[in-house]
Length: 222
Ligand SMILES: [Zn+2]
Image 1 (cartoon, rainbow, N blue to C red):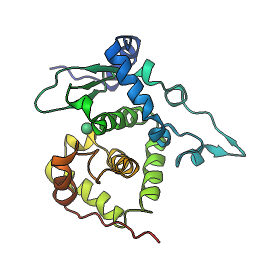
Image 2: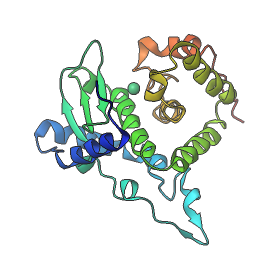
Image 3: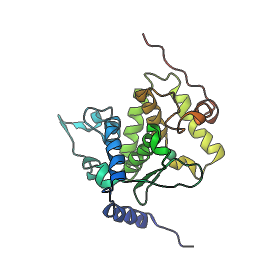
Image 4: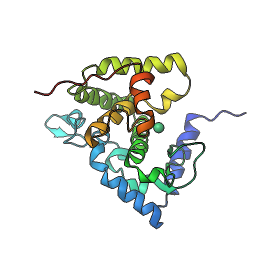
């Protein structure tokens, strides 16, 4: 079996962007839905007024960003489709084809789309120098710490869980930034914590209480 090099993967991704076609009515509907949520992802696009924006403010002005972020567009850079998926998956983002697929049922729930949109933005940042993921991580941690009392414990145990159970695969698919952003979206959408990460109700308690082996402790509001 031949091994795929990082350079080959990169060129497949660059090629894929040329083939994105969201012109069908079904795709357009999904793109519009993604744009409806776009304000929730300002931090992952380093918008000036977001929690990550401050990192760009140097010598009295906002610095330019790489094209991947500055010119980001759901319509031109992500293919949206309704389709069948393996197993009981309701949504998927394929990083090589840059395609976000939702099943008919998956498309009915906003939190499925939100989960997959985190993947879109996560992979965008992963392809850039580490500083972007690091700033996103730092900023989300700082922000969520205002609400979640034991966030550091959650981060540690989340990662320790993967080291213990699945060191080669799944962690890569759901980075700490992914996990934090999912909690951020739960709070912003008014969902129970774990909803966006765990695709809604049935995994929610499992994720927070057993999967992370930790009970989330919320801070009291004055
Ligand atoms: Zn996922």
